[in-house]
Image 1: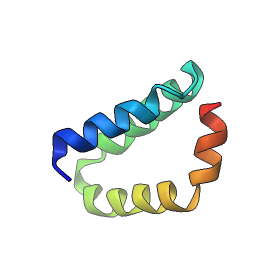
Image 2: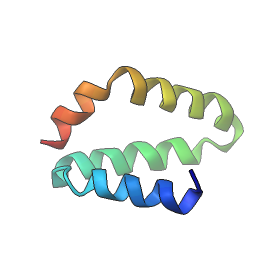
Image 3: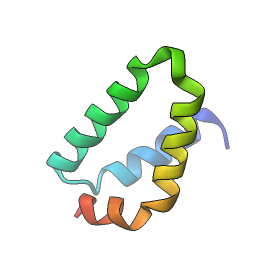
Image 4: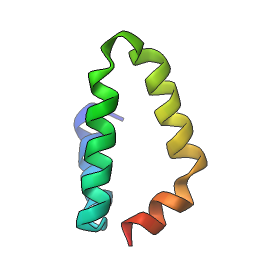
Length: 62
């Protein structure tokens, strides 16, 4: 899947998140992005969180 397609699909999912959940997700992503020196392990952590905590993220979106 191309980067633009992925962004589009993420955007569709985020449309269902509450304002609070979006704010928390944005804060988390900014914090993750600010840790430039540990980017690779951070991305692995993010992938693990998104995979393992999918149900929790769905609940946060509601």
